[in-house]
Image (cartoon, rainbow, N blue to C red; front, side, top):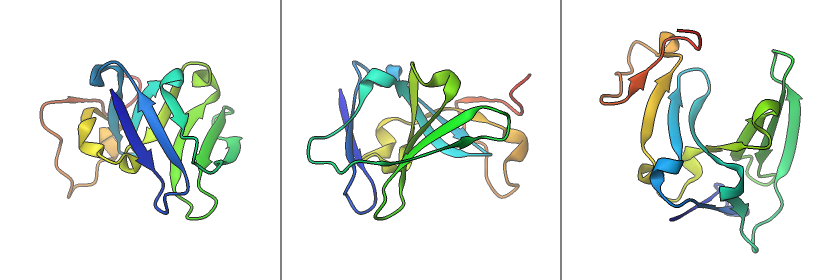
Length: 131
């Protein structure tokens, strides 16, 4: 199945090609946002897409975090840490043309969930990474 997406201004366009939606893991992280984890080989920018701008920096734990975004509108497209570089990409779910096609399978850092935000029913919940 092919899932398409783009930045806000449509300068960056991409495709996720996976055999099944089960190959993707969308997660709501209450510290970092809604991302969809996919195999690295499943992601590609389309032929008509502009080139993404790349930002790399220490994520605060000594690990290098890589982010790709649009230089025109600033929309983030994906990110990955050094440990996941060869295996996975974390795509910003809101950039998918149909974000509902890959619904969340879990919530992370629920300890940081705002009091006004309800728990997402029917998925797993983790308060902290180590539990």
